[in-house]
Length: 429
Image: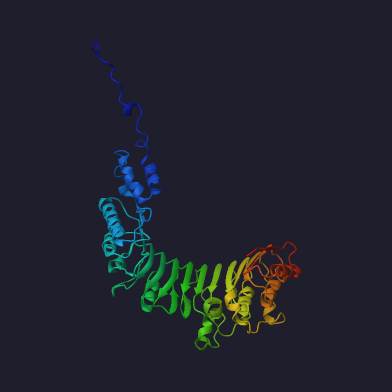
């Protein structure tokens, strides 16, 4: 070093390397996986190691976090979002396992067809399209050729596969909400997904009869207006939730007959573990001659939730049939259809001497009664559960209103209990 020269300071990066750049690749991947796509792209300014790391993200989610603005002018949202998605897909260099489009202010745009075609060529595994505004979006035909799909979720869409559609051979999970499709399209779709394990179907148009033929199906959640539901080859089905949004009282003539819907419904559900009977579906199950118990007991059923009109004797008998046929039932939730009970006060209810009441619910441990108004059929039902549940631990009762709450509580405390450990918990409405 020459005289008069200042000693050179070592490079800062030599002494203190950039900690972010020194992170292992798998740690960076983990960090990026917890960020929105908007935040992930912004990490490209951190260092050269981070610059294009986001472009290998396997899961792409374009929602309101991606574009956190709201505008009455949908063209502004559309133009910005289209530019973002085009930019990300253009620069993306890795495998795309999941693509989700769910911006609350986006209406269906033709660009979705182009993105779908691109994704099917990249062997996409999970596709979620949620079109929150506008008319139902017609799914492009190219999607129905994608055999790499494992999970498909569509909201506010119209499904019309081409005649060459052969099903999704690898699909395991299907979630369709607010969709339109023809009867034959639905049946062909379900029967040609041999690996299907989870099926969700909510608020649909074009379907009147639900024919479910799915040998590997384990989870089934449905709610809508339909006339009939049948199962075939569904012996692995374990979790079932069905809501019928159609009051059968308005169509009595169509539902009269001697055949039992209870028997037809359960014949292909031998291993159901969790059952939720929502809206008016218990009324559907009560159509025909209600048996005292099912020919084959539901030995695996441990949780049951039912929505019931306590002024309808047929629904009560259907509920008691389920109890009698479920020897291992442990948890029960009962929701009274109070609004309907008020309009059917003249219907004859079963008396406590009726043969349908002779069925101990041996394993029942937890009960929740919701929407109770204190009418006699409800009290008979509660009394029955307390009297024939020797291992009951807790019953929670929540009335529909605060009127007469103290009198209802007095009635509940008078009932005999088969279980010395049973406690009654009263919840204010």
